[in-house]
Amino acid sequence: MPDGDAAQCVKVAIRCRPPSKKEIANNEDKIVELTEAYADPSIPGEVVLNDPGGHEEPAKFAFDVVFGLDIEQYQVYETIGRPAMLKTFEGYNGTIFAYGQTGSGKSWSMAGAPDPPELRGITPRMNEALFEKIAEEQVGTKRFLVMCSYFEIYNEIIFDLLNPVADRAKLGGGLQIKEHPVMG
View 1 (cartoon, rainbow, N blue to C red):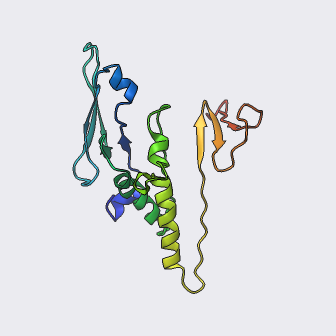
View 2 (view 1 turned 90 degrees about the horizontal axis):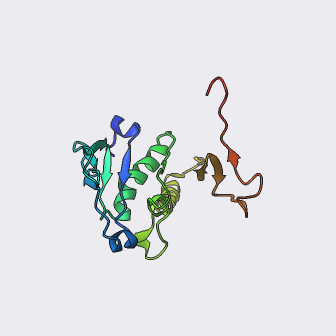
View 3 (view 1 turned 180 degrees about the horizontal axis):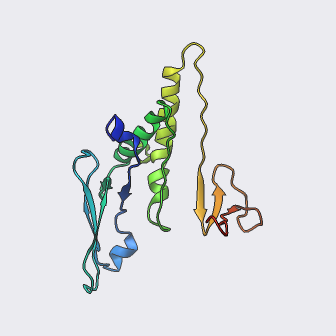
């Protein structure tokens, strides 16, 4: 994300995971075509979904950022995580919302793996950079308050991942999402 006004708005990014070993072993058809766009905001990214049966026209979608199958974890952080973190030092709230079905790569993008360090995801990289930046900027009486939420919404139930319960099946394991009968 560039600095300035454009960096303050919502950006929508997509990261497609590579085919799994099972998908490769089953000789599954490739149905997703990606036009990568993450380094230059003037180049639009596109995702095309093809019907494997060939009965329907391909569906095309545009995104602000499109990461290809071979993207490195640090590039995802530098494009998504670092700009969001830096904006918080200007007084903006920073939110990264990872959405997708089970097995789509949300946890990999956000957490990654601890070793080797280049496999770390957005969260550990952001935590390290955040506290380094605080240490640099904390002079005199200037203080910082860091507040963080990390939760999962699954089957319309919210789970706090920073303070998880031992057994999600127990009553009270999460907060159920309610809809107001009139206001929605």
